Length: 588
Image 1 (tube, rainbow, N blue to C red):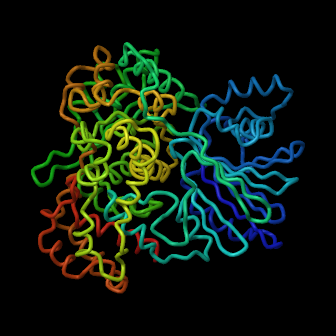
Image 2: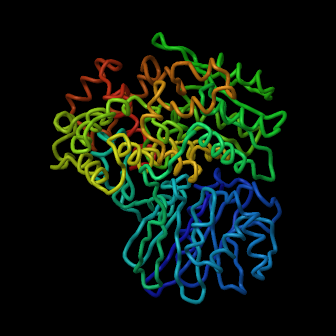
Image 3: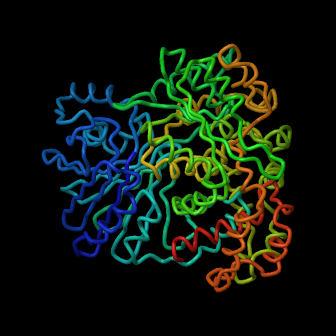
């Protein structure tokens, strides 16, 4: 994991090296172990390095191979880099490092942009061809690694985070009205390529963008899971178990120790069990808990302790008191590349702060619910005809219907069309995805998963130079899960096929428990200093001048801060406040 940045010029001028250098301090937490810079005429690359594979200077970036005429900047990890390295050696390539970065460079020379099809891992990279001046940008299949873009006449800038682009300057920071409507409707998610800012876009997952020297470009979508029944399997739990075992094993590739974020739920517990089964001893695991609030417990230590004891891990409980909670809120908002309303962000920020002091790489259970139907909105879709699936999904998942939104957003910010429903309808209308549940799982894995839990984990772990790896998002595991019949995933209250696969491997108490989450009662139940912070954000001069929300709506929420909830039970007041806090933090 690292942070990358760059500028491409298309107007005959040299790249603005100072602008790229201004981005690097904003990426320092993603790469605390080193900094590099490259410029060649209209192209400049910058990089901040986190040393995980090949800890020597030979693995530094930007990496140039003068004999091949290529330069690369890369963020992520290619788990099969050793196998690819051996294959490339057989083709006659020589290596000066043992890094996966150099494997990307040689693989691109050998196979062109189709090299991404051979990569098992998470990645975002930019490769410059010195001879043609073409630059290829690429992002992994599930969008685990981010890549943001800011265009202007005659140039394009890119970076691993949105704040890095703001640091470079000259960005249109006006609010994108369509993105705002998505934020308020589509579970606070803004689908790619949009962001909340008009001047910043993001490269969609599984996308290769080839940019010519004149600024013209072409995009290629190189992967998608089918969500059709193309696999005839007699024993789905056995297939799921074996594929997950391989995914977990792959993610142990590192030249530093690897730990596990152990929430106490089935997903992270399964990862620990599989690692133990592979002979890992003395595995370091971490759990977090908060003070109770509003009658709601703030930890799940009983389950994580059970798993840690059974598998003999070196387990660490991280208990968060009120003295650490409130300061972490602003720090969490500052770490967000885009506004993310989930209160889990604060949990991950605090967890990452403490975990990063002991290890540099962790495995995490994110993605299982979106891949294996673990959420509450999937069961109501079972049996719904495909022709009525859009309305059924919107009714279960959208934060509020369009008619209600029209009474909450200020009239000048409201878009005339129900853009979120239109977006869902376009996705559901694509070929494939046999059932309504399949269609929901497809859009969630391609959009919501990428721009909520995956982005949350990336932003919060990388705020402390901690690399998070997510085996449930191994693309081969996702392909298998997509083909699994929906009724098997919906069984046993959700993730049924996973629960059957885990039986006998994970303690029954964990498998049969009520679904859990990172509990952060201080956000779900706003009171005291936290409510004061929310009030200050929404009543600030900046918020009043911006005028995103109808004043009567804000006043109603502030008068009753914990009753109004979105469709899925999130606090409506926190959703508004988080957006304003993010905009104010970025001085927008």
